Length: 456
Image 1 (tube, rainbow, N blue to C red):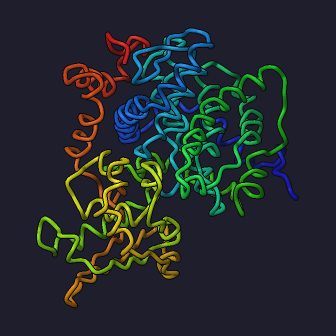
Image 2 (image 1 turned 180 degrees about the horizontal axis):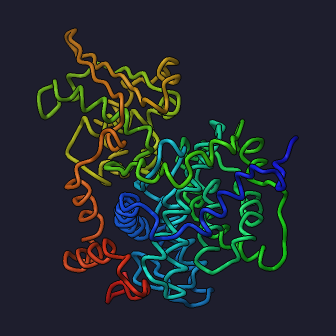
Image 3 (image 1 turned 90 degrees about the vertical axis):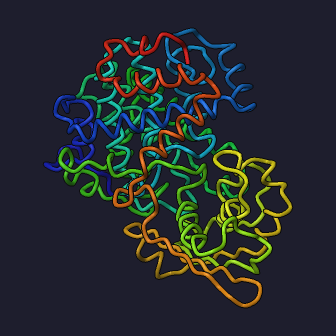
């Protein structure tokens, strides 16, 4: 096994580490910062919704009951904590509904891996919002580039993997850790990633949501370990992502165009609380549904056949056992939207799981992989769908580019509605708007611990 030497002229890991440590906030393009603010607003609402679930209420009570106090928000609980615990809980809550942003090129969700750490440290140290936003954008870019450069094993869930490196580097930048030590920190952090697996999704196992919290907590712990003198291998990033969690990694790809070509603006936001690959099937269904009488009558559907790229076809389970399993079931997503009567989170809750009409339609939806579609991924996210009608007719639908991708952007009004739907039941209309306005202006806030005059 060849390790990447640190004394060669080309050292991709040193370039990534110095990018986070030295790139000036004022040199980040405005379009990158604008997108970073949009991700911030969306993610805060998604975290708050996750934090109000029974599991996160129980976990936060237990965690905060035995932890040190601090200035960092535990979002959605109206409480504050130290930066370790706040970032941990916010990371888990942000992944809870699978409603957070992601990046197709990056093979995952860079935002929720690094944003909780950036915000928690910024609030603990009472930093300027401009510095927090810049650190978030730079660390996001590194996470995305490591993900892009890795041939991730199909079984691996991306949460808790690349993000540990990004969380460690964002913590290093915001705490003033020496730039010349950040390469070694990144290598150490990459050696603490989780051995995650996608079966947690198929089985509806919510331990999967812990993985994002692991990035937040372990990234900060990696910095603490490095400060105490612990060391990592010569290139933990290459070892972990070429041999352990991936089937290959290219350091050259990870730094190609670094600082000129930005991956952050090329991510996506979600209008449905499901795995990203399910959205491709939802788009294909909506294409077909436009040709059917409205509202759709499920009894007129004999069966639905779906062909998809591998990652979408992997999510073929017809009968998820609970609300979390619905996030990873193409048949359920199509069935619950076809039956109608629900929208947003409630289309994917336990009541929908138990709905006999939805369950019956799920049994008639079949998903298979189309190898030619897999070969075109990720440049295309192609899914085709045939609705066979009782009586012999059929309707077809197709998705080539999933809604929300850069070439098919979402309507800003839909994202505003998403924020309002998630935030207003928690904070009320006036405070929700106040928080959104403050987040959109975070780079003008001199102390992010005082961003708004209430604790969200």
